[in-house]
Length: 112
Image 1 (cartoon, rainbow, N blue to C red):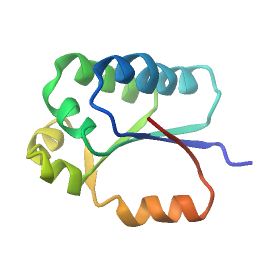
Image 2: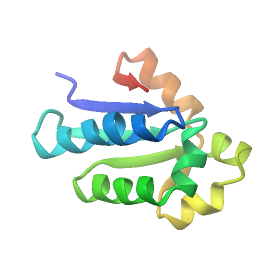
Image 3: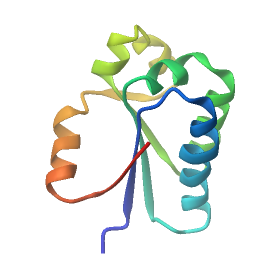
């Protein structure tokens, strides 16, 4: 059984980030719904993550709960926030190929 959830977070909507992405990610770890949870910051979410303190606080809570958070470097570059995301101790890597492999291998991916 695949017990790793990937949340592909693409929206810059702050309410969706708080009330879906991080609420579900954190509860998934704390309640044992998934053994592993990875949030992938992609697209407009990169700018929101880099600039909004409430989102940064939620990301830290998620990490403390055992959620892995990683950002797409291509997206972060487009929004000019690579250094800000790295300063938050986030992994910032090329995600195109890894995401393609996850899709081809039918990983569990929730896209928001």
